[in-house]
Length: 384
Image 1: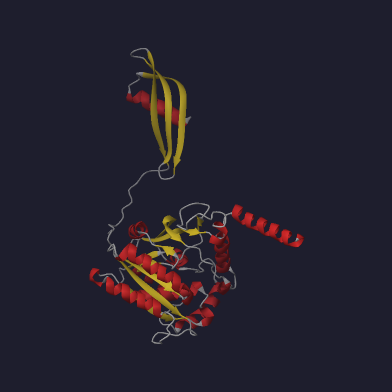
Image 2 (image 1 turned 90 degrees about the vertical axis):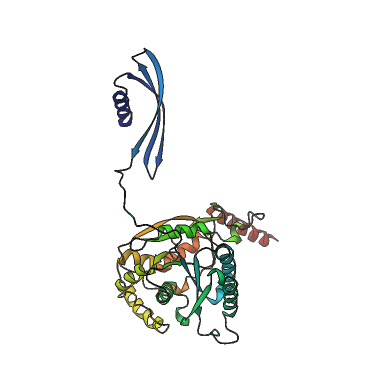
């Protein structure tokens, strides 16, 4: 009623009383989260000048609040994106596919990116320099691709980190170990994008990383579209090719996934120094074991400022804004992750990992069908 009365008053003012309101004919309303409420109203009026009845369609917007221009720094669309990809021995096949995809999307198209592989060595695996180096095939592929595109300035590099066997499943500590040891290789104004081997690379995603990551202003934390377990999903759709399309039957937006995050080195270093009392800064491989013990103690005594990821560190120990939104161009292939290395005192990180794992199995109808098929098969075997 408020909108209708305001519209009538506006029309009378604009036309200086020429039109008199007669009746409301029909109307439509739509909510736009960026603007507010949009109305379209068909109203019947009496034209006092010509003594005729006329219809007028009027569009009205009720904004959410007062509109204001927020000053933001100028952003360069050609900023180099430094992609950091941690790799374990079990990720070698996924990493090869990632590198091939990176070559076709970025290196062949001269996109301004740089890929750094972080090779996570287990002490029991053959290390660098050995003939049977566990990452030898990854290094050879990186060298081959770098030599092929060196005239264009594109290359793939790597650094090696030795991870204690007791900490190889501790994804929280490894996330900070990788970031702490990698940032020393870049300048303070470098843009960093944390990646995973099971992601699909798309140029529009990299462009949004450039536009949404702002030095000393903003960190970008996209919510990826994660593929369901193919053993569940594609059982019911055998002709379906695995292209990870945006469809509720093939995957979901995983709000618990925070490992894909982009930031500037300067913002990370500033926040990291403030959080050093919770997780000491890791400067060499040898610091990882001692840091884990201190982290466990801080974990047991932590309250609201507990750090479970780089994303939570920026929330608790930084003044920069964190942009968190769904990202259709960030798509993750299904990977059966283990949560066994995350069972700590309060189980916060473990519960988060378990939720992600359970929600990535499939839709409720698909899981119900699997259970019913299993029960039917069990009954038939009993009767045979």
